[in-house]
Length: 225
Image 1 (cartoon, rainbow, N blue to C red):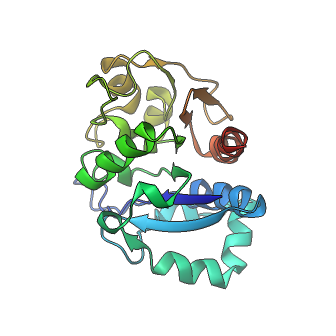
Image 2 (image 1 turned 30 degrees about the vertical axis):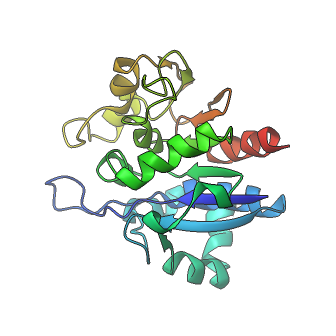
């Protein structure tokens, strides 16, 4: 089982002067679910090398068993520091792809040509594509084989407007993910804020927030099985 994990390379939180990137839990939890199930995992990002970690995701209140495991895992930290460039990976080499969130993907992965082409290829090859929290932003320009938005008519979730309001970034982000998915014709739904909520519609798997990360990875494994 070969799985590709695609992380953001974007570190600036709009014009706030604050930093963003990927959310640690949304990487660590799925990584260990997949690795413990026997998956061989490759890490990639648009720029390659060390992807930026959202500093807020390293605060004490956001730590979990998985993030603590990651902090002790020097081998994984080394692997993370040397992600391959996204334009150098081929969907042919993998069985599935997983996108962790954090706010970074709203800026880079949403419009990254290599990422868009990669997701479209995975989908055409009948391989599952999975996204959590803000990572469904990577779907906004992805087309289905029929030329329509990939999310059109599909059950999807992602970071909700109410959660964005709660973190006070509604006016900072380039777009509200919930609104964008609905605009594209996605059948958007959500669970309670900050609680696990994940959906599968065929090959498309999405999770609402950090708490949904492990659940999305588990659905991905079931889909591959």
